[in-house]
Length: 372
Image 1 (cartoon, rainbow, N blue to C red):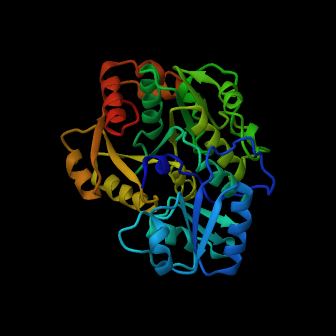
Image 2: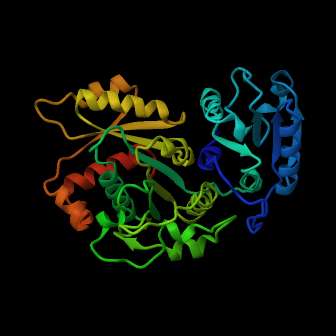
Image 3: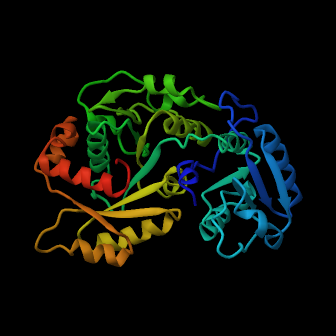
């Protein structure tokens, strides 16, 4: 999988309009290979690739696909394909129908597919994604942060990583991925900072202008952020298509995008697929490690690393937890007095200035390749 391909990871379970903004014009025509004998998927792919301005080659099975597989810019595989050619890169997009349900996601994980397009709902997104495949610009790196157990400190870690990256001169955005989390903005600042929140993107379709998107967001600690509202009033959440448009705009607007994914199964099946890399957080206890293993099984196949929150005499060794989960240990989140109160009072950024926190954050970012 090329570095460019990894950085173009996109969400998949979307409900998007058939019309799209064609402001993102490809620099080169992409060569696209479809492997499927399903007539419906073939016709849909032909129509979508034509809209994207690409060149489509269609083969019915894997045996025919072998010679053109690695030379194609994009490899589309239909859900009727159950086996892949040996020693070839993973398919770029798995195509399927909404009626196939969660089986599509399991098949995508088995194939190592980078993303899933559920047709016909995701047709407009797929056309736009294919049009971008000819662009030399890779876009920003998306790093997802997810707690493997309750109280692991995923939100705190996400905020501190965003702050450290911004201090290092990296253009950074932090995204609140949990609509039931109470609003990440409350932990970032005690003040009501002007800027758009998730519900403001409810009607979004197609492409967002990167400059306008960047300028519309609230900023704290040197980084932009997109939060769910920190109020008790009900709000309408954007659908998957609108969220996909936001994630695409984030990639084209910032060098580093950190996503506080949340621990719901739906988040793991959607926002996690937008990420290039995953940080899994866990407390240093046996029960937490077991819970983290279950979360890990829900995540798409991608580069992942482990962060362990603190340790004491009664805790399980961080290295042992990492070994049991089969993940590299990227760091130990330091225990900092006042984190709980800081979260309630919007003062986590103040605590992030402390030397142990800064050392931890910079170490994790450098190990994950988020900063040079």
